[in-house]
Length: 221
Image: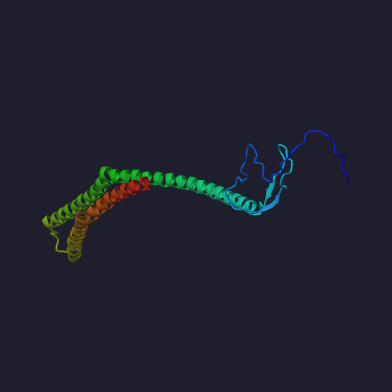
């Protein structure tokens, strides 16, 4: 190459290697809080505009994590639904048990009042009536025997004497039977007073107490 020498100003220039720093810098980091790998990045000094992709990151691990999270969330939601349904059933069962406990208290109270006001008196009066009836039989049998005894058979006829003696024997047997019946009635009343009535009262009071305790226990469950 040849150059022609000309008169003019001599332009001097300086060549200096270096880098240019952008006036506005941006840190490129993934938004997800997880480690990943860069699978593509734009060439250095390339011209870009708004919206251009500068770098691509490997999202496989993050996508798997998101998928696992969704599955876990679905399972938790199902468990929550089951828990809610289970709680509803438990509440319903508890309400039914509490109602049953309240009904048991009412029934126990009613049974106790019924026995104290009616059944107890009826049983006592029934036993007293049996004693009174047996006493009347004893008195009637003794009266019959006294009448026979006070009016002996005066005829010496053997058949009539035998008939009279039979009446006396039958009257004595009637007295013995009536006295046995009276003794049985009195023993029945004595046993009822000593054992049956106290046992019945104890059972009824225990049922009332147990029903009340059961109600309290159901109310605090």
